[in-house]
Image (cartoon, rainbow, N blue to C red):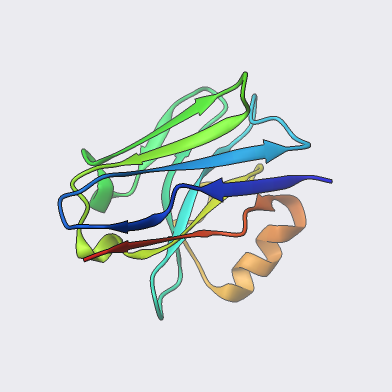
Length: 130
């Protein structure tokens, strides 16, 4: 069974740091698109960062210079190091893997349902910054 399992969320003060981890079970991150999305209360699902198969990276403007995405192909773990956290970073963060990761910068709940057909999505981890 394929699973993406996030960990590392929690509470942090403004200006603090957290590191999210996503373990891939039953699949490999190598050679594919993998990344992180988030959903703030009442908002759509926002693409935060992803790594393309050529190892190029993307960051949404609001996190550039503060977040760093990385992957360990031996451990099959995807990481998101978050520093200088702001209140607006509060959200549930989701790990994703598959060919459509990064295609849409924002997704509605309906679009996410379609996304699930060809991609993998974790259960989410809450990040609260105050």
